Length: 201
Image (cartoon, rainbow, N blue to C red; front, side, top):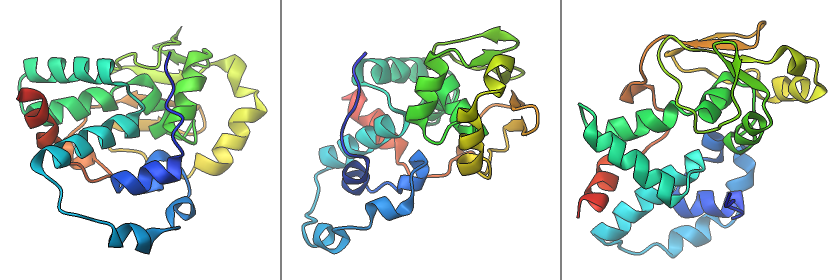
């Protein structure tokens, strides 16, 4: 599996993303702020569309082939394609784990899921892209609850705000998906319609 090894702070500056969206400290992206502002130039329509696509891919850690697959699914579902696309990304198991506060970053969540630390409806799932549905319960495996790793994560990410569509039980280290993700639930800025326009050409 390919891995994006670009420096987080540099990529966040380039894409105008707050590191907090990814689970990192804001301090990591404070350098060269004024220099970047001075170098800004007028961007073409294609450039804007491409940037929004790169931003969404980077936030969720998805590579091009899989991202395009999500786009295809989003256009086939009822409703607004752009919102469908974000909902599909938000329903990934690694994103749910991040939203629950059981991983500091989505990148870490992806690794923890791959190592088999989580269950969906009581069954162990080790596929980060596993699509979680309304009514599903995601929980940390009993064996993993004893790990010091998750104690350390709880100290850093335990206070993270969880979205309204997740009912999180901090004590049991589990969460239930109570409803579908809605556009208003989003905690970052994205012009998803530009991504749909880019792929529709």
